[in-house]
Image (cartoon, rainbow, N blue to C red; front, side, top):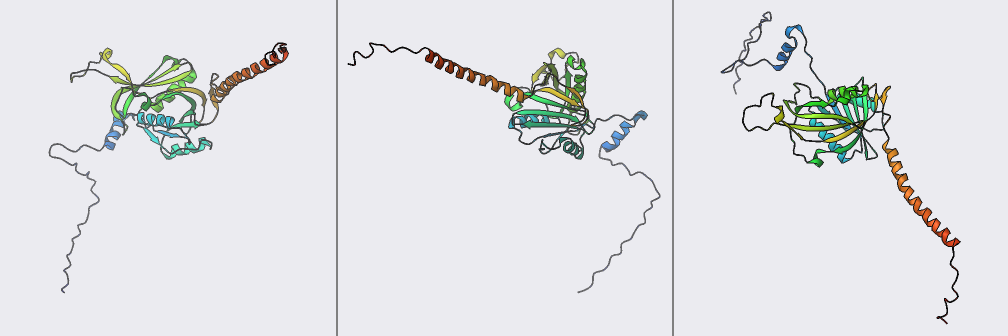
Length: 317
């Protein structure tokens, strides 16, 4: 067989001295736009001022042996926060401060929501700004998940919420700190990749009986025409509850992340173990009253014995 011919390849030398910018791509109609990174850099350096970009990310995780209702509540909150990340369960008896702060750092987050379940019936929620703090410990009460409520409200998944706070949050220093912490954790950052640029629901935080109550409402705008409503037509808008519902009872505020000096401690907080022991004592008091009544009846019969009747056995003979 004959040998194949070798084709000579001409090597063209490159001139690296030219600093010409690559030509911009064109389509049939318009020029292709610049990449988003270049646009963001241009916006941030506009007028010589760097613009602030909110890069808040929240890590949501739970402890082991969490019940299904509390797990469903956690998943509902994850669905409301497009800037959240999930992680595996953590053993709550271990050193929470070191373990959780390391997990938050590895996942590239700035805040943490840790659902801690004890005795399969008590739920505690830790809100923390990592790694420097502060952190707040709540007891979660009056839990109603979206699967339980079956409400008629609905809104887009990933849309940004409007946040409302009652006037009580501005009256006390610890509530002011809670307001700032709730804003930073529950508010969806602008231009987040998983968020939608719409405001179609409201997060309502209100204080009653030293508890923080959470509600989620849909903003319903009833209009039949395709035209938008004017800005002054707020009286036609209505709120429809979506869910979930829960109540937060603040226990203490710490200076660090999951630890540190205690800034505030709630004097009205009562542990659920104490409440259950008081209920058991109340039930035990009823049993003690029954035992004492039986003992009094026996002593009364012994002290007042009936004398035998003389005519009791006449008809037997």
